[in-house]
Length: 160
Image 1 (cartoon, rainbow, N blue to C red):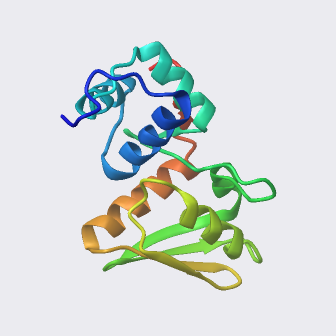
Image 2 (image 1 turned 45 degrees about the horizontal axis):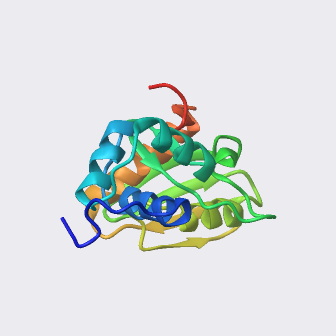
C-alpha cells in the first residue's frame, strides 16, 4: 500500500485510477475494482464504483472490463458488431476483416480501448492488423473483439 492509504481522493483522480487499473489488470467485477482501489489506498463503496464505471463508459466484455474514453466525433466500441465481419489471431497479430471502408474506424476504436493488449494497428480498406505483444495476447484480443461482436457486452455500471 502506498502513502495515499486511507486518504480520500477526488472523483477525477479516482476515476483516472480506475481507468489505469482496468488497463493494467484483468478486473471483472465491481468488487474486483473496489479491492484494486483499496490496494492503492483508496477506500470506496461498491455503489460509488458502479456509478464511476457507468460515467466512464466502461463495458464488461466477457469476464473483464474495458474502457474507451469518449472523444466527440470518434467511433465508439459499439460500432464493432456492425463493422467487423471476422476476427482471426495469427501468431501475435489479429487479422480483423471489416465492411468495406470501415477498417479505419475499427482501428481507431481498438487503439483507444484501455486494457486491450494491442501494441498498435494498421488499417486498410476492409482489413485491420492489430499487433499484440505475443501469441497469447493476440488470442485474448481476438476473443474480446469476438465477444463484443456477439453482443456479450454490457455497461459496467449495471447490476452484475
